[in-house]
Image (tube, rainbow, N blue to C red; front, side):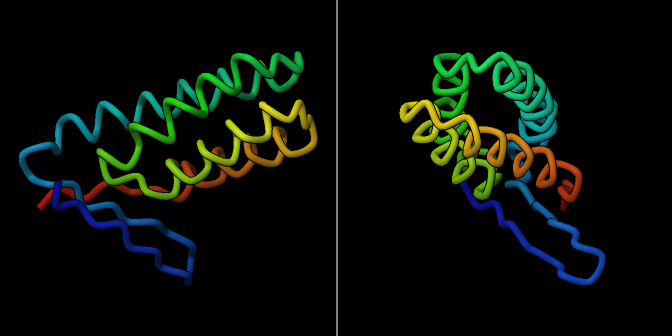
Length: 109
């Protein structure tokens, strides 16, 4: 895949330019990331570490395929935090994913 993730520090925008052949899939996956963020937030509130670990694992493996490199790293962090039953770190990871998604902008070329 030939996607690029650009971070602009001014108004903190993260611009992702997916491979043109995968632009529709990247847009769909962006919606999936929102669903994952909600599920993680709910599971973190209940301290359901198994759900957080599973979603974190999915993010780690799939996000980079669509150009969401940082979401993949957040997934790795969430998976490890959940394995350790670390509620504080899971909350931080959940917040980090939500903050990331607020800044992401997909641009098709």
